[in-house]
Image: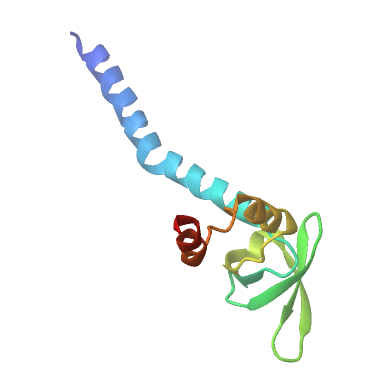
Length: 117
């Protein structure tokens, strides 16, 4: 192999390693953050990137209104400012799905004894 081919192979390998170690993990973190922000509903407790704890009151296209402090101060923040979710409120659909997944009640031991006699 000549030097040009080796140089091209090394360059491709370097770009591949760079992509796997830096770009791909960052894309995954960004995707998780977008999904977290998209799933916020009124009632969720959040913390902003600046360290403000609050409860989501309303969701707009590009902002949230949150309630903070004992005085119930309302703040309007940008969606990108949400740092994380502290407490997620269960949606009505999630509650309904949970109820459907429950198994029917199992018979008590006393009922089994009566059947045996």
